[in-house]
Amino acid sequence: MTQRPATTTHEAVAADLIARLERQVACVVKGKGDVIRQAVVCLLARGHVLIEDVPGVGKTTLAQSLARSLGLAFQRIQFTSDLLPSDLVGVSISRQASERFEYVPGPIFSNVVLADEINRASPKTQSALLEAMSERQVTIDRERHALPEPFLVLATQNPLEYVGTFPLPESQLDRFMMSLRLGYPPRDQERELLISGGVDRVLADLDSVVTREEVLELQARTEEVLVAEKLTDYILSLAEATRDSAQFVLGVSTRGVQNLYRSAQAMALCEGRPFATPDDVQRVAAPVFAHRVLLKNGGGGLEAARHAIARVVDSVPVPV
View 1 (cartoon, helix red, strand yellow):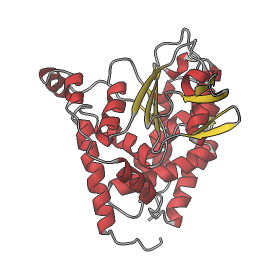
View 2 (cartoon, rainbow, N blue to C red):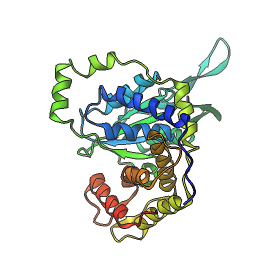
View 3 (cartoon, helix red, strand yellow):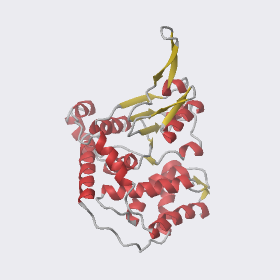
View 4 (cartoon, rainbow, N blue to C red):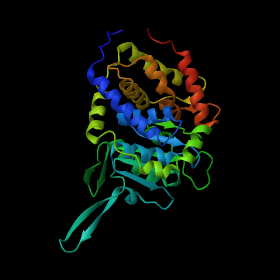
């Protein structure tokens, strides 16, 4: 394997910034360190997050606490069946005084966007959001408008409700870097939250601990993390195993492979290393791959897919 570069002060400073951010978010989203780390990995790797979970477990709180801790603009968009693409991206309106059309940006022009219950919007509106996520810009009247950087979308959907919803097709699910599940907090953490006066009070006390400029620097440094040739082959072997396995009807796409590569780089930076390891890949494989595969039996949802991906990871030899 390629000789690993020594850890420098830059990586140590980056890891300290990331740890500070995670501790701040953990003050509100209690007992969910793994989920917080995965959301931060998506931010550093310039990806987006799909959270599939029941109402009231902290999806909105996670997005708000991230935005507050970073000092970034936050928008929550409630997706409904009558939400139009223009309600997201904005419209051009006529100004009679100047006899010109003026573009009025929509709520998508924010740094951290919570797309709540994305599967309740029409496919046309879903596509408008996913296009903005992918291209980091919107086009109105043939004019392109760049979205602010950094830009992170956390989209949610309820796995238990199907009436009045429009499930995201596989081609659109593939645009999310990770799929996460929060779940209920541990009993002692939930007790602590009740005694402290609830989420709103704790959120109000959150201060910015990482600046916008520092986030952009962390994103740039993530791209510089070394992924050795053998580790790249390991990532490819994991993807090929999903395509060849009898467990799956649909294996991981090329975009999924790219996202696993970038997520491993971000995980390494979170650990203060200038190089990625097999452990970094394994820690993010399930959240990156689970929503991209289709199980042959067609059941079980994301949780079953995560278990299947875990079996794939166990079956592929680890490079040494």
